Length: 223
Image 1 (cartoon, rainbow, N blue to C red):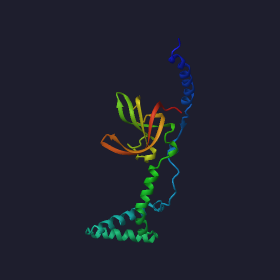
Image 2 (tube, rainbow, N blue to C red):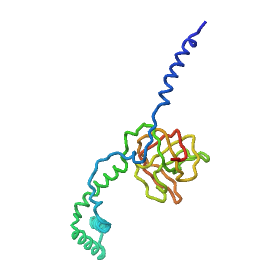
Image 3 (cartoon, one colour):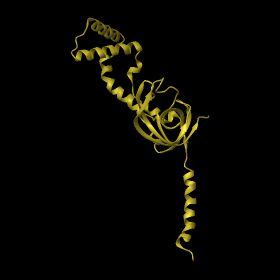
Image 4 (cartoon, one colour):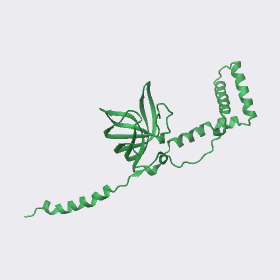
């Protein structure tokens, strides 16, 4: 006599066969670091038009005025430095008060541009090349690391913008040849801002990053 399990078996197998191709066919999008940067609103940054000398004079004016607002007694040297800086800026027709008033607004726009993410990548399966900065180890294998776009980032070179740093998690771990091993990472990308502590030779640093990638494949880099 056929039992219920025997009767249902063909339908179970058929369901598995029907589902399997859909899972296997999930597309993987190969991306570049440029893809991580979204189209942001273009804004006018007047500070970009200043020469290094003009920027320095503007800093002198700003810091000296902060001392004056704090009712700190000015030395003759500081007063003379302020006077000369203002004269040079006036000669160059620089709107000192206008620029100083814009500092906070421009700084906020710069910060937004550096942290903004490409929401089209959220939840997508992607493949991206980069360099490894290990965070967590399991024996000789790295299970968690920062993926950065160039050698030296965060260590010997300036920290990239947050939207140019990816926190990669890979439970099985992967063996690498120290810092900045070039790899391909593949997995689900999540647009998730956070701060990661990176241990350095002389202490640690808090590294902002805008993406997290839960990897299922990591390979040594090959073009």
